[in-house]
Length: 309
Image (cartoon, rainbow, N blue to C red; front, side):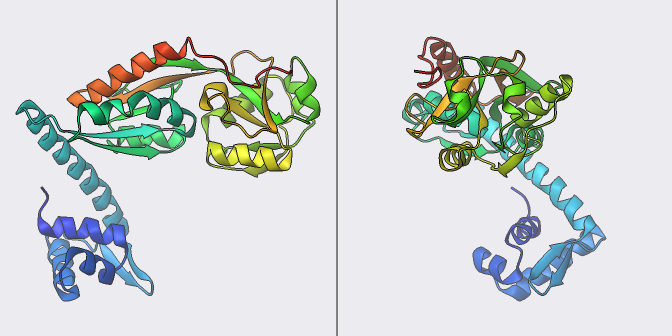
């Protein structure tokens, strides 16, 4: 829906080189260069600089690019809304998920959505919760299933789905695996594997230790996916936090177990995060499926290995 020069600029910013962009667009490099020159004259500022490795956006170019991306998404949403109201309910659902909500969301939506709407498209984006809020705010995703933030931007809405208990994950042979209850004082003695510093669970842990005046455990390994954390624990003997509903029964390696942590306030609430306003029919159906899955999950069996044998 954007003009050619604007589309060319978005493509160039994404590809990072004139050569690659021209090949992708099916135009010559001189034509692409002239398009950028026309755009810069219209804007009245230099947007792109050439480097030895391709191109870089100037400060003006970065600001223009961010605004242009938002405008492009808004136009796409407007077209999709018109199609929906006109009777074309194929739709595109841009769905955000965190590592801890991936299994739940995929099982809730698939194959139901693809069977009910075979002409629809679904685009999943995975990120930790701190990044996911930004994606919802920027309209990169229409819906996100993620931890409910303590503070919510006025433009965002959140619907609670379920409580996600927080436990410890360790090798079956770990000394703490034999204890019925584990306290924060117990776990300060052992090295950890953890998510990034700004991820929701990591922040929860830091806050819990701070409230009790305890020294944080030593973080030996950081990983940015749940599967990576599980593998690290399985191969190193480090301990880590895991939200119990993040992994289905039988989803852990044989030598890894989950143990309860005797600490209130560590469970997190999982909900549907979205911007206020129009919600497409396919997104509305996704919300219905997620609600139904959350209700059914309350009757599900706990993760195998939660308690010592």
